Amino acid sequence: MVGVDDLRYAKLPQPALTTVHQPCQLLAAVAMQTLLERVSNPSLPPRQVMLACELVVRQSCGTLTAPLR
Image 1: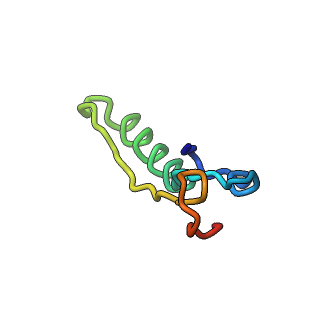
Image 2: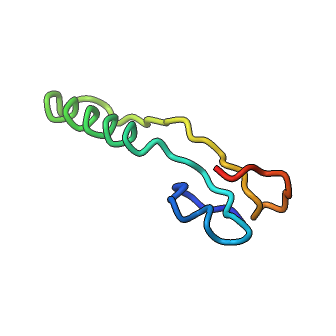
């Protein structure tokens, strides 16, 4: 089982939940910058922005050696 967002309580259950950590502050900053660019230039073409995320492996994926993060 794998979750998304790497919320603080993801490591509390047993087994601890493997999850994808998303850079929320960076995500917000990029969204705001993109919005401001669009407001200042409405003729900009649509675009897709992708940010890196991190897989945080914990015991819910079946591994016994996963560290608690």
